[in-house]
Length: 142
Image 1: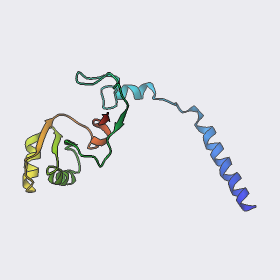
Image 2 (image 1 turned 90 degrees about the horizontal axis):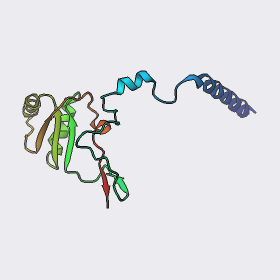
Image 3 (image 1 turned 135 degrees about the vertical axis):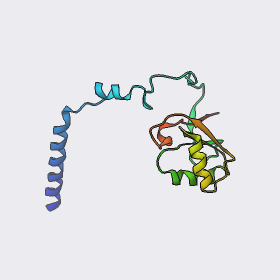
Image 4 (image 1 turned 120 degrees about the vertical axis):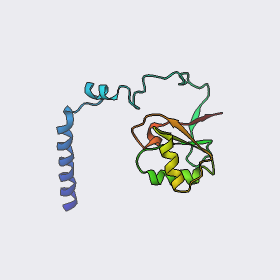
């Protein structure tokens, strides 16, 4: 009996919470859309190097354990952790560091005795260390 009462109590709470949220928008508000213009999330504008035609065969995303040719990181926060990623990843593939000042990154890595071979730099602005979330999405076909 107490289980039935507990179930009914939880059900009524869930129903009440759902009823209160009916005025929330389902999609982005006009203000949120303005905030996203020109950001990483503005997918509506393809750059000159974007591929806009769909592949002719099915595609699959790359699995995290598959070999890669290059690893891209953004030099933001967590610099010690990023340096350790560079230390080990440069032995397996090219490491591309997105940064605003490559000299600063080179000095940081050199001070930690990390060789710079296998590391290249892309001078660009970024606003997040989470390259996985904002970077390229690798897909394979055939």
